[in-house]
Length: 279
Image (cartoon, rainbow, N blue to C red; front, side):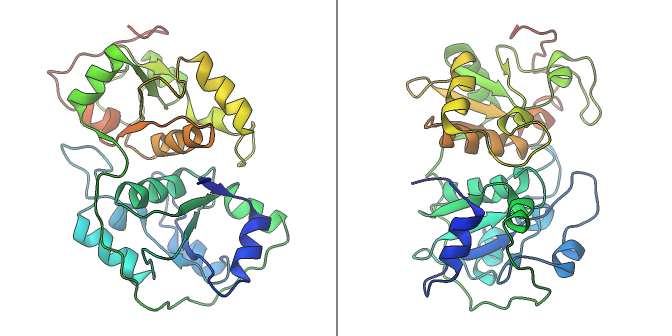
């Protein structure tokens, strides 16, 4: 199943009787909540989902965006009309990081048909898609999470994978090298991890994914191929979900370390590497 959908394809599907459930997950790290932007205009029929409160638990020892409480997540998805037998499309207002987090959570929790709008709201508007200020009130869904459909890594799993497979660090290269750390307690990377900034999944200045063949070539140059064991982490498990999505577009299965660097660096017993090489 394709993990992404174009704006043109989405418009066509929304016009069908069995239209997909549409989730708006606009979010800015450290910025204001996305709900006011949603209320000012969204894709018709979309329901707003809050990343911090519905797609993550409060920050703590498990990182800045730990997995959400399953009951909270299930309630949010059912309130948004998510059903197991109905496709879901997710979008945000940026490069797709927040949408990818929702995509990954739903897929990990067992939903069989979830896609991200390629290019997000910018692509929808560029295609001439209509906007609405009406609040959507869908019928309650029936989605019940059944975790485990996608591979989830613990800190120990990530450390082991870096030694035997390919562990991609999705943060900016300067954070990977340990030259700067604007958010977390320690600068550097997990020993053995390979730098692979999420921002390179899209064309510079854009929001649409690079072609699948181009993504596959990019990941192959980093050692990530369909027959390799691949994992991804970032700062708090959000941009890394976008990397997992990009890998899926390229035909490469990958596991996600949700705790990511925010969990790893909070534990002083865990080793830290710096510099341009995996270490």
